[in-house]
Length: 83
Image (cartoon, rainbow, N blue to C red; front, side, top):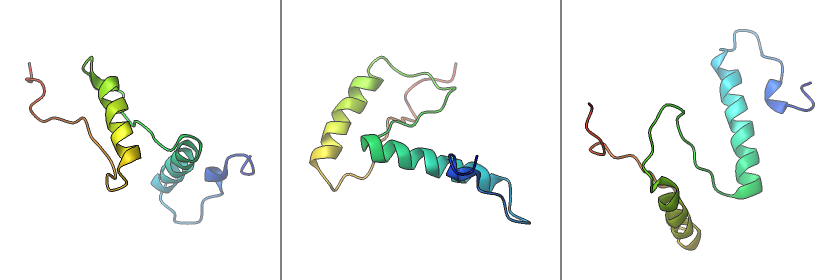
């Protein structure tokens, strides 16, 4: 199985379990960036505005045309009142 899923390499003695999770994220993100070059990484419990995907598409174009842009964010502390 380790041959097909490299992040499942046998754990070393005294290695924290969180290291397996980190290896999995690295493997998955390496594959995404290798195949697509960009990724939108979201939490599963957030509410997104109706313009979230169009916004990400536009900033994706900006990132592609301007190599000085490393990453973008749609986070806004003042975006929605608590309740």
